[in-house]
Image (tube, rainbow, N blue to C red; front, side):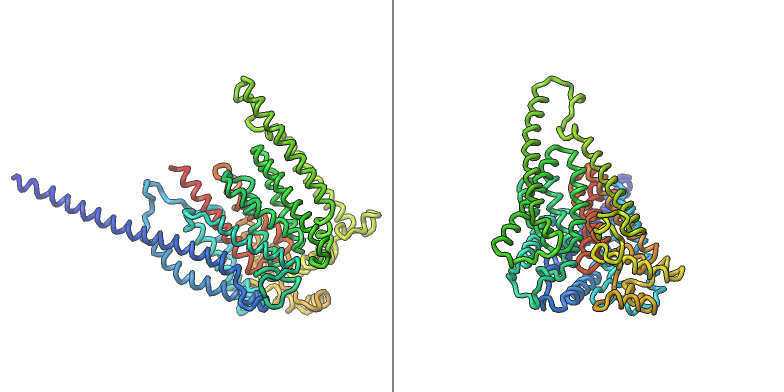
Length: 557
């Protein structure tokens, strides 16, 4: 009887041991795959940010093509390795985490990315120019395959960047070198022979407009970190970074940089009302920018031929305006510091209930934030009204009518009036199906020039070049991917920005990615997508998503 009673227990124990052993094997395999996926992301980020940004084997000769070919090979190799790893990882990974809770699902941004992918597939399937659409127009290379690479970058990073290594300082180190190199180039100093050096090219990125697109993604990292980080060493580095990054914007030569700076500093101004310290740091950043402008002004005085100062914005930034603003900001910064010390001493000395006192001096000035928002809206509305009136009836504004900024014609916004108008003219010629799903990725040019009336118009307007996009990313997507493609693209940025701002209450680093998304989106309403800015913004979107997932996970535990 005893042996009979013992036997079932032994069997049960053996079965339990076998099950436990199998579970351990499964978890070990899952852990290994998880580590391999995380490692793959770190290796990809290294090649994308460090190697790819510096890659220019022939200098500026065929730099766009060389960059594209490198990026294409890098993505194909990554896809060949990561897709099997990720697939296997999801097969063997348990549906619940170690705490027994279900793993995180799909976010609103994920849904817009998936919709964007679906529209790309449909657009390519129906396109009459598949040979052009697969990789894209020569020199631009933003075709169907490239769009899938961008989507893949987002998905891979959003799921497998684990934040165990903070790569933001590495990004700043790399882009700091590129920005400093760009400043040297603008002052006719070429530390590296890039072949075909000229005023139109900067560092290892290339064309000024392409460089500005790259800059719009990364300058925000230092600008935001300087305001929100509490790490002293990182803030010092961010301050140095800001001097170079913002100083470069003043002399870079592309006016679209000021669009990015404007929206980012507007965002920083609004969030600076959270803490008095944030406002102090924002004032300091303004001083960094104005100070950098004055230093470069001094250089041009010492060496007048070193910088081509042609252009209204460069002359304005390197003039007395930024000197006056620097003095005003310095006075405000000193005054705020004194007022804050007095306020803290007063609240510490007075025995007042905590709930009846403001914890931050800047909270007492919130009316200024709303006043500024109101004034901004009023100025924008008044400008649009004047623009519309003067465009419909040229000269009606009297002396104001002579300013090109108040007349929307082909020359408005450095010829953006022409490119936007031409993009909308192309869209008007599309069939109903093409209006929904576009003519095909990067087929803006091949379709537009296939219409005889439009071809004649384009050749007259752009006799020495070819119109390949609308210099407005939304209009370009409207033609290439239709209304569904444009709306899904906007949805990606809108949803990510909105969610990042909300999560920033728990994790201020979210502001870095929110600002990057905002900067790129507004910049590219006056510029274009290309192989040196679009991969990086999808990278930042992915990192922002991974950060939000981490915040959500930590809030559950």
